[in-house]
Amino acid sequence: MGSVGAKEVPQLLNEAGRRIDGRGLEDLRALKIEAGILNRADGSAYVEWGDNKVMAAVYGPREVHPRHLQQNTKAIVQCRYNMAAFSVDERKRPGLDRRSQEISKVISEAFESVLFVEEYPRTSIDVYIEVLQANAGTRCAGIVAASVALADAGIPMVDLIPAVAVGKIAGKIALDLKKEEDNYGEADLPMALVPRSGRLVLLQMEGHMSRPELEQALDLGVKGCLKIYEVQKEALRARYAVRSTEAPEVAA
Image 1 (spheres, rainbow, N blue to C red):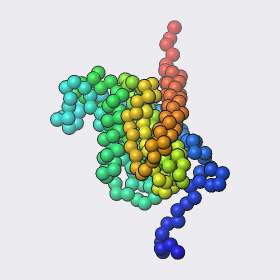
Image 2 (cartoon, rainbow, N blue to C red):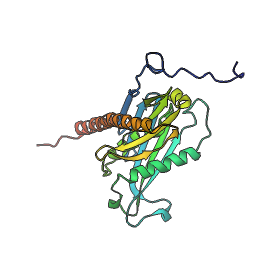
Image 3 (cartoon, helix red, strand yellow):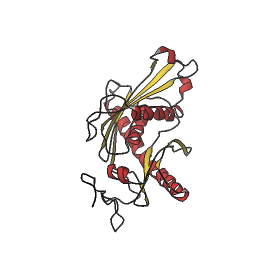
Image 4 (cartoon, rainbow, N blue to C red):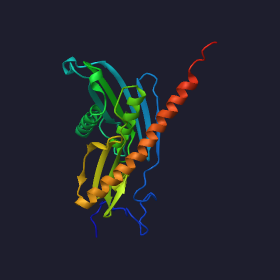
């Protein structure tokens, strides 16, 4: 008999190999991206990914604050990733905790590697990511939203960055984990990709995978990133289509 109050581990895969939400092992959760949702930001995007809801806003290039961080040869990329206190079932303390600070740092480094920062010396490109509702994979959703927001701001970059988490559940490699799979699975592998070059700009892992499992996870993650990449591009196309219809007609 289990201990009193112990949580029952859910069945992550049924006999047919379907996941608890009915998806197959290689299926993404439903993904919706909208660009240009904030009027006062230079660029912005909103992402609904499964039960995740994430907002990203970009400001800059602009004056660096604090000034001592200024770089004479390039712009700096400052990212602030934050989970709202109401974004999870267990109310969290407002403000940046250690996890948020670590994620902010790795996201900043990922974008600094794809933005043409040398074009804007002595300035700052500020990226704000706010998780409004969380259900696993929030750092990947934040990267996806921020990437679209940077493009919406017109900041030159090598490519958009799609991101996704691959994991191991019930001994199987699965794409795009949701909360129960993240909590009770054996491994979690968030990754972010530059599609044009195939370069990974983010790769972290919690848990354990064998080498063949890791290779399978990376292959599956790349396929997932490429699907997300298409949704990102479509969101920007829709944004530009709106801009063109709103442009005033030139009198003859």
